[in-house]
Image (cartoon, rainbow, N blue to C red):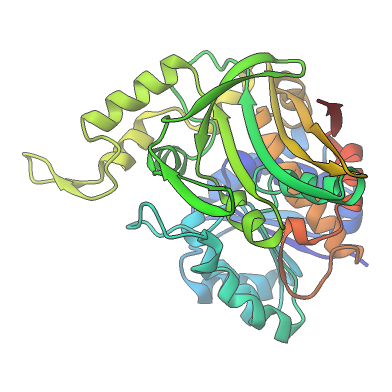
Length: 405
């Protein structure tokens, strides 16, 4: 049975989501792309047609304008489009309005990041407990599925943990999630997804789960080097990240940490922006009397992440270094994916960061449509059977590899 899909968002990740949904519209049926800026949705549709990625040309692919900050607007569009699955790849500031609309309209919900409040930096731990998890009972009562954090990290890396526990270990003690972009976009400074969200994420204090307790340190305060498959040795820095906050609760593990690679140049640029106040998310008034938010000004000045795709070269490597026991013997594995920027552009006119984040929620939508993941309650990815997810990702563009350490 086909499940019509509503995609909310029109950025780089939404671009990939729309392409991959179009490639699988035999299962996902009619596809509507909705955003505040209609022209961006229409540009995505043009790209899908340009790459011949609409598998069944008789299935409707169309765009709608939407202010998703208002629950009533989202409810109305879900009903008008007869959408049964909503993929939220808009701003993380909109999670709760879209989620509430899905509850009211009776649609399954998928997102790729934890909810954020504009005025809050350094939210209390665990992040999901503040907004998303209190809605679990409502989804269960209505028999609706909500899959939280179904991108790559969070998302696939959560499934890697579940897969490792199911197939590789009797007990897991340490999970180190590591994300490296070894690509080159040719710009002086740019972020690979929404600059406002990305720079806030780096600015926040680092939260991590270690020795079964929450710990905290400053950003870029802890780092290490690791020799990754294919992309080689890189310096990675400890960061707070969404998946830590569900994995620490849902899995019986001592330690969960997230590490991301940054070049010295990136860190220097970030520190300059921070020191002169341009990462401030609170309004200020210019000498001309204009009220502006410095971080939004920086966002407006930086390249649109979607615009980076055509010139991007190199590869990404994202994976989990997992240590635990099997049959009484300690072991470690690195379970990971390698993604090529140029190949992503050739297929869907997007860069690999958007591709790795955009393909997994489409796989989740397909698994809801075919019943494998239609669990009729709210879950994080690690609570689901990882096998059909990882197998499907292998088929539709994201290959998983395992290296014994």
